[in-house]
Length: 153
Image 1: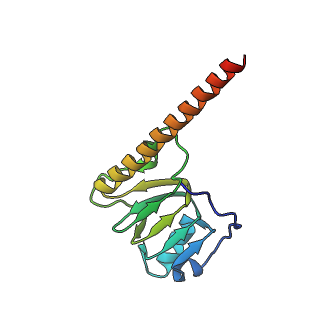
Image 2: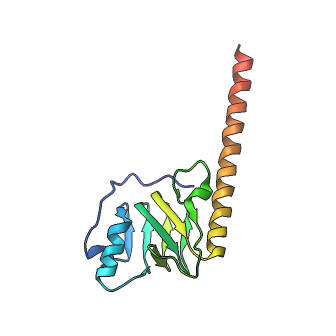
């Protein structure tokens, strides 16, 4: 995972959220972005790239075709599965849908994720694998710390 950019985060608003395709080092309030797209007659957000952005809710992000998450922090949760929602029908209402969009080194705050069963399962595998790797790394660091303390006592 790469270190986030040190560039200050800005906050775009209004029609700018619809008209632009790339966002970098910006705080995006997802409900505002969804409202601006709906006002423009677009009910699906697509063809955008977010790099080193803070994506804020509360909201549920719908994972459509071509959505990619690269090096992102998906949110704070003791159990990463709490970030994932599975629709009970073929579609989900009240979701901010995305298609053909990249999220690179972004942080998500108060965002749930949903989409086709396969997309949600893939995201769960990625999140669970990352969490397990972090837990192992922390356990190894703690063991090394304790061993070092034992040698100096």
